[in-house]
Length: 104
Image (tube, rainbow, N blue to C red; front, side):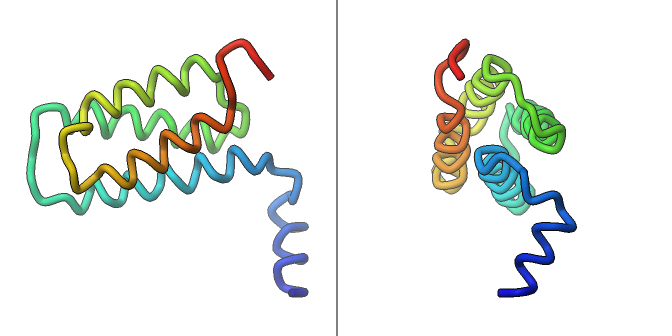
């Protein structure tokens, strides 16, 4: 228990839990996509948008409209790949925690 308290202090324990969830979901889907053996036409689009999402999550203050746009592009690019569906659902759930565009 002490270790997690110390870790929180070192990493700046004030991180928005939504951002942490987004970072985790993006990392998971990126790993799954990298491990997916089959090439498909829009893989590059998915990889680019996941990289953009990772950058937004690391910045700590993602823009909601941009998050949603990236989610739509990723979903369109990999939505038909059933092996990636759980990771995509996790990403969608993480983006949805930010609420509707224009709302805080």
